[in-house]
Image (cartoon, rainbow, N blue to C red; front, top):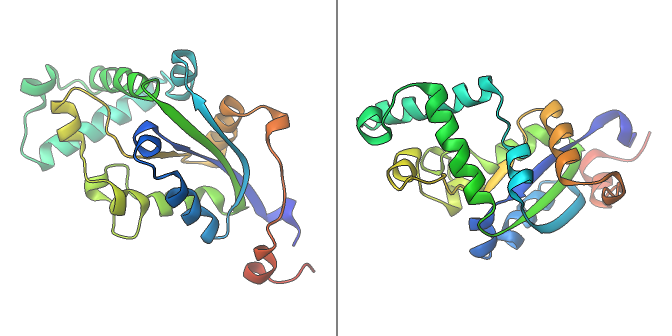
Length: 201
């Protein structure tokens, strides 16, 4: 297989709730069984600075986060203003970002760089919808978590959804550089790739 021509890399984080629940092996096993190669893997105690780099203060991202939360509130017939004190998407996004940073520094995180054809899309499919309540059975979040934005916001904390997965190749490149140094990525082709994709041309 001409690896450089068809493979891409992505990042998956097993967040503190996944680590503390002992689900690392289950989650990593699902990724490997799907045919992805683990090319970087480490457990870290995340610093506040790392968490703040990971959860970008980009206004577009904060607005998107706030809009998702407002849609979730509307779908569950709850009032964001009475529970969060505002219905401004950017203010909600900033609030949730602060909870995410607090959550990521609360315990160990496993950072995993993965490689394979369509790696970003494959990992997103395996992890399932961001909100575990909405994630389909068979996905990591659908099988192993049950919470929602409404529950988490009432408790004034981040959604404990086990994992983070890069949403695009560009985001994956940025995130891998945040979590791994160049000497920590060990490219290789699993023996299974010949069975999955056929022999090299």
